Image (cartoon, rainbow, N blue to C red; front, side):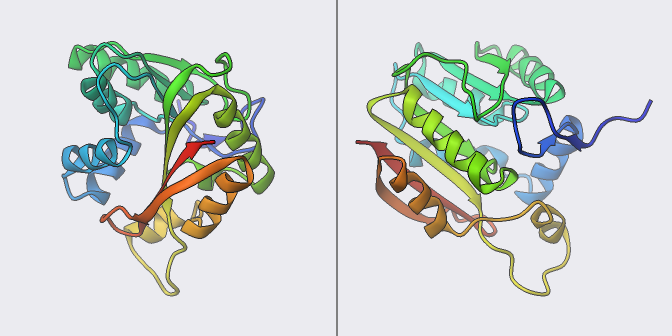
Amino acid sequence: MKTREYSTVPGTKGRVLHWAVRYDLLVRLLLLGREGPFRERLVQLARLEPGQSVLDVGCGTGSLAIAAKRRVGAGDVYGIDASPEMIARARRKAGKAGVHVHFTEGVVEALLFPDRHVDTVLSTLMLHHLPREARRRCVREIRRVLKPGGRVLAVDFGKPPRGQKGLLAHLHRHGGIDVHDIAELFSEAGFEVIETGAVGVRSMNFVLTTAR
């Protein structure tokens, strides 16, 4: 039986990836086998602290949510993704790692959480899969579920250079977003931009914001 690679899912206008095993392999190649240090870098950028609650939107196969759980300890960590294949793999990885993360299927335009529920939201390589209006809805939902003063770390590819070939060219077929556009998107939704910059890996950039 042929495995789905991507599709749309009811409730979202974004592209949903379903190739969970291949996704992990692609990430390993992209990061040259240094996935652990990369995720620790993101956890540090997000300024996670013990006891905090964290939501990873578009969590994929769950690796960053698992790293976040190790950092916050007793704090609750949630991961949502619209792909059942991604969620199934994330749950298996968490079980193997011996940590408890609440992984569930869901769409970023309508988060299944009450208002003011989490301290920090993580969004990694997800926004570029959404068309413009869906991005706005996603950010408004993130603002809704954040506690006052809560933070968001958004990481995504920048725009690819012309003539680019190879692995990054494959990844950039799904798009990229200028870091200034990400910052503006969050500012329009009522966030204060704390910091922006390069992650230090490939063409990835980050925006760290706080809910006003």
